[in-house]
Image (cartoon, rainbow, N blue to C red; front, top):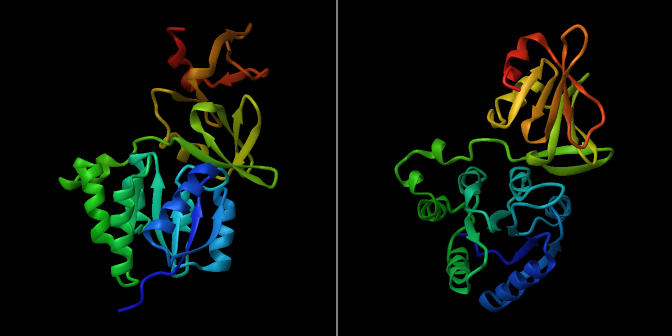
Amino acid sequence: MSSAPRTALIADDEPHLAQYLKSQLAQAWPELQIVKVAANGVEAAQALAELEPDLAFLDIQMPGLSGLEVAQGLEGRTRVVFVTAYDQYAVEAFEARAVDYLLKPLKTERLQRCVERLRSEAAAPGEDALAATLKRLLPSLAAGTVASATPGWLQYIRAAQGELMHQVPVAEVLFFQADDKYTVVQTAQAEHLIRTPIFELASQLDPQRFWQVHRSTIINLDHLAGTRRDEQSRLFLRVRGHGRELPVSRAYVHLFKAM
């Protein structure tokens, strides 16, 4: 039996919540040493690689890298507890071999139960304890229908802008467009790049909101401003927040007959 964890990292992009968790842990587990409080996912991943703490308390939605992405990149002995306001990521947390899944606003008694379990367990991941949490959060999981509990469509995309990585909400994307080895993720504010091909993206996006209009283009209908036909009856789309019109290939023109 290994000794209980003694060092931990906290990662949350909201400083007051990170400090609140730190203070709560100090009361519930005085001997636990917080070796780092990270302000984003990238900072958390770097600190975890360098410090290899016993535990990481990770928020899920953070700039740069999500808590799930940080957890999936772990190679050392660090065990993960997710602390988040979103219960829809519980199944993915289970797949990332998390020890526990705490919902915000954090309740003192819930954190205390987590701490008691961590202090008493060996270093092996506590999947049974997490499964019990998931069954409370997701009734469908208790019935054995894990797939139906997984969020259906892509909500965020991790994309590059220069040397920086950004977590881009798909709701803000005007369109996706293939560009050589990359796919452009165009928002009203900026252009980002990802390596996921258009055909693969199409299967991950909500078809009620995102339409493929060309072999190289997928548009977000929420940002569609209108259509235009030229003298040759070719169809073009106008997108809010973007000056350039997008061509529609003949294979997809039928989608816009009602417009």
